[in-house]
Every structure is written in C-alpha cells, then in structure tokens.
Image 1 (cartoon, rainbow, N blue to C red):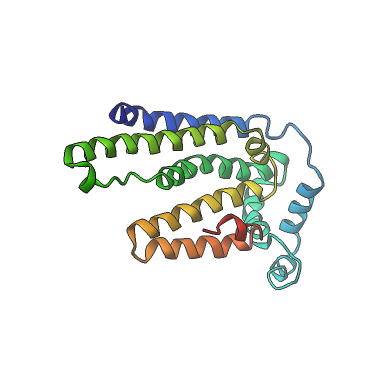
Image 2: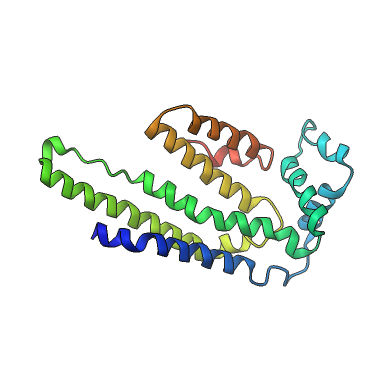
Length: 207
C-alpha cells in the first residue's frame, strides 16, 4: 500500500498545489479594497524614510511586509490583483510546506530490535505510508479551507505569516532530525524576518 501511495503522491500533491493556486487567484480583484488593504498600500508607497522608521518605532507591526511591497508595486502598480497576488502565492506555497511538516510529525521510526528485521521493515513501510497519508489529508484540508482561501485573497500579511510559520516549523524539524548548522541558520533567518512581517509569528513558530 505504501508503494502504491508513493506512486500517486507526487501528482496528487502537484494537483493540490495547482488547485490551491486556482482557488486563490480566481476572482482576486472581484472585490474592491477594504480599509486595511488601503493602509497596506499607503504604508508601502509613502516615503521610504517613514516606512524604515517603523522598524524602531513602538507599536508598529509589519514594516518588512510593507517594505517588500515597494518594489512589487513599482513594477506592477497598486491595483487590487497586484496587492493580493503575494498572498495567493504564499497561501499556495503553504500546501507543500504543510505536507512536509505533517510527514515529519508522524515519524517512520520502528523498533526493529523488538519486532524482528522482516516484520520491522514491513511495519516501517506501513508507517511511512501512514505518515504520507496523514500529511496528504492535511494538505487537502488546507487547500480547500474557506478561511485559508479567504486570507489567500486578502492584501495583508496573514497568508504570508502562515507560510513562514510552516517554513520555520519545517526547518526546525529538519534541524532536529538531521542536525548540522544550515537548517538552524534557515530557521533563525525565517523567524527573525517574519517577526517584522507580523508579531504573531512568535506564537506560530514556538516548538
């Protein structure tokens, strides 16, 4: 069963990613901007000095998000589709990241010393398939979740911090499993940058 699941795993995950992208991009500019989205444009296109001062001012949230929007707006303009498209991309990227996190949270480890070599390998194969199955179900749920689709169509940083929280969790799990400095360097960079996109990332990336 695990081998059969493995054969269909990649095309299924690719299909989910394409479906997630289509759901989030379809009708992206159907609704006009609401107040917080207008604020996002204002914070991004005002003078660079004002945006940079947000990094050191108290009670300021999301300066790095607004700073990242500046070159995107300079290239593409500031209409609804352009503002919301980064959220659609972040929401789409969250799908494979969730799959990777879910697969690692259900470990494939089996104590072959107590079960016997051949039996242990069979159980390990079953557990590997189970881990991928649970991760796939999670990816399906996130692809079609109305709240995730909603935030993937909003010109704010919420889909982005979800994506970054999943990336940080993936890097943390890789660091715990594989060791070495690079997953931890990636984790540090991701969390440090994400804190300047939204302060809620501190809760979202806590082990």
